[in-house]
Image 1 (cartoon, helix red, strand yellow):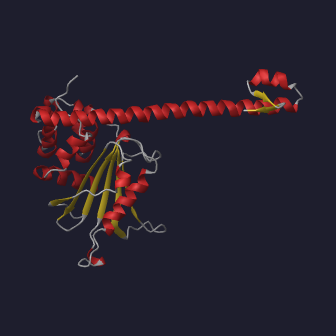
Image 2 (cartoon, rainbow, N blue to C red; image 1 turned 60 degrees about the vertical axis):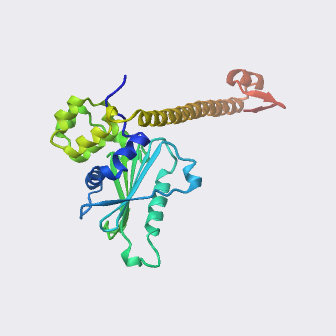
Image 3 (spheres, rainbow, N blue to C red; image 1 turned 30 degrees about the vertical axis):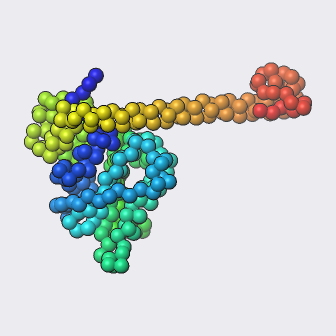
Length: 288
């Protein structure tokens, strides 16, 4: 089924919404709602997104936006749809790199701006956390005081966002942004008009996803990204299934070995043990 609105989780679409100068008001509104700084962002300057080549080649289904506000504070947005082990470590590395990257011969330590790394994930890097948005910073472990605010990591775990379309009338603006990122392509034009007519910026974000506002060439690029993401998901699901089967197989072997040892203790003939457990008989000894 062809939907009116495209997916904001698509690399091409995400950058169109949040990474273009003409849509800077969308990015500013989104960051102000999610990051919730004491001093709101009033303007942004887009920066070149620099990645380590050796890391970039390993990343799948990722989009990035980097910008700085009127006070030279930096914001990095990354969408990571595919599962990645220890993703939080790379997030911290990128945030720290952006923080250190401000230091030059003309910029003293006292003038370094704050850095916020916002990860939007299609999986749950922190499975034990109940809320869909987590904010991680540097705090005093004894008093829980947030004395150093220079570096913060935020994780939007989309699988943990559970609100549905029926909840839209009662959602906060922060929740509406989360809904947009997770379900935008499921909305109809009538539903957007009904629920977001009073919110012109989020409504504008939906209009940027309207496939009828995209050229044929842009749609071809969008579809190419969709095909790549589908291939990545297929590989990931295949690896999970393979790992599950291998885990079951190893578990069965271990259980059979335990049973065999218990049967040996009661002096059951080895031939009977082999028959009962399916283990091999090699050099007159049981092995797996």
